[in-house]
Length: 153
Image 1 (tube, helix red, strand yellow):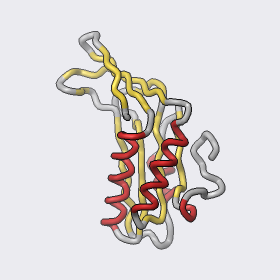
Image 2 (cartoon, rainbow, N blue to C red):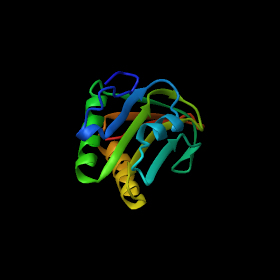
Image 3 (cartoon, helix red, strand yellow):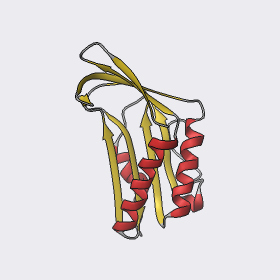
Image 4 (tube, rainbow, N blue to C red):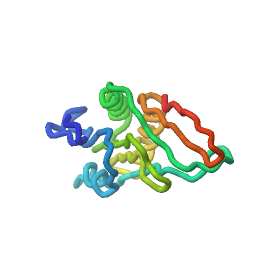
């Protein structure tokens, strides 16, 4: 795995993990979609999480993500489990770190499968497990001058 998120050797269950990474640079839905595209994929589910302007009825002015040094290994473990439990053709997951603005894409996951139901199920599991198990933390700042840390796991 290179730090730019490209998996040149297609490691993972039979090359299912096509793209994973944690980056300071903007994320691309097109890149993630292309990573999981395949001739046998009848369904591709893509989820993009963006920075919203509010949280729990408080106006958000910005946020910053930080990650543990083992973040990519933890992300790979989550993806391997999803690949083992779902009949997927391809999986991709990328997450931003650093300072983000309202509207920026913070995370993108995608799953491809022969059928849409399988792609949706795998994509949902991938984003849910990423949020629950991968060591990424969000520091939010609010318009009222307050701030808070939110742990992704």
